[in-house]
Length: 111
Length: 113
Image (tube, rainbow over all chains, first blue to last red; front, side, top):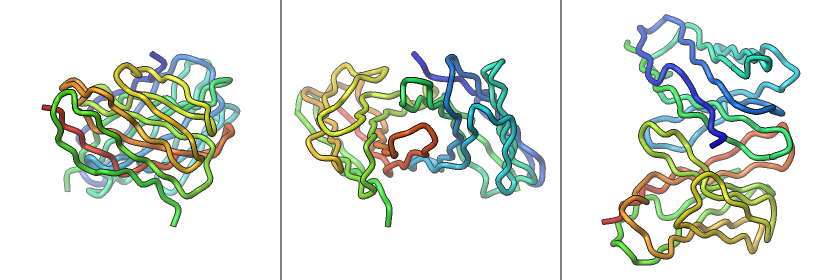
C-alpha cells in the first residue's frame, strides 16, 4: 500500500493550545496536502505544500515538509472548539499523478 | 457552485444485490477517484480515472467496478455486494497536474446485510 501514516491517531487538547499532527509517507512526491473532515462528512482541502518548499502558513495553520525524512507536520495554533475534526495528509506522488491519503488524526478541542 | 455530488447518501442493501453509487462533478476535472473509509484505516483508494475511458485500480479494487464514459460522471458499481463492503464511500475529483487540490463529495454510507 502507498498509504501514509499519521500520528498521533487521536489528540485531545484544551481550547487555546496548539495542536501538532505528523504525517509520514513512503515515496517521492510532487506535493503534500492536508485535509479536514468533520464527522462523517466529505474532506475539505486546507493547505498544499510543494516538494521544494519547507514551510507554509495559512491563517492559524503552519505546515512543514522534510522530504529527506519523508515527513510533514501540521500545526494549528490557538485552537478552537470548532477545530474539532479529523485531519488527513495526502501525497501527490511523483509520476503517479494520484492522491494517497494517510490514516488521519482525530483532534478534539475541549472548550 | 463547484461541487461533487454523490447519490445516494445512505443505502442499506442485501448481500448479492447489485448496486450503483453515482458521482458527478461540475468542474470539468479530468481526475476522479473513489475511496472507502473504515475506522482506523483512513481513506483507501478503490479505483481512479485520469480521463474519459481511462481507469486504474487503487489499493482495494476487489469487488468493485467503475466506468468513465463521460468526463463528469464516475459511477461505482458493486456487482455482488458482501457485508465486508459495508463502509463510508467518497468520490473525489481534481484537475490534472501536480499542484491541484481534490474536491470531495459528501459521502455514501453503505450497509450490506
